[in-house]
Image (cartoon, rainbow, N blue to C red; front, top):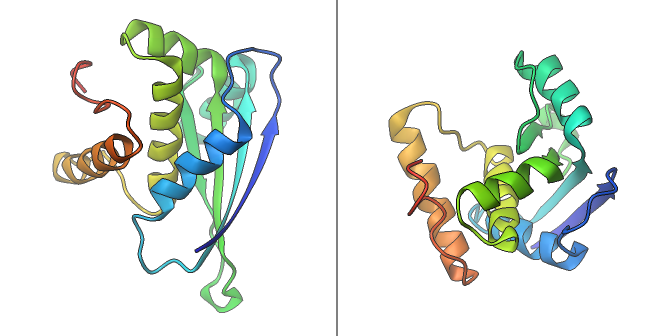
Length: 155
């Protein structure tokens, strides 16, 4: 599979994973869709204020959030590999990792896998869909040698 990932960092915070790590995690999630030959994703790492702005504008929630997924809405006749955009809030990921007793690296991996699966059409609003998505996240992350993401946080 040919994968192109554009990563933009728009925060001064530390503790960010390397571009290579992010690409590895996203690619692992993309491999869940065997029909993909090519994929293009943009990732923007942001601070609380920018995350809150996006979350308010697009979801009506006036607070920062860990990851937002914006699937590309292209006409099928264009036949482009663009899957969409991910916006990840570094400070929220850091706080959640600490609150959930997870390593920062493992939580970053989870957020990028989670967001990428949303771009592939997975969701967790309906309990049955949530079970499918969470099971897939767990398989991907454990294959990457991270702990199961839902084991201890009650999600």
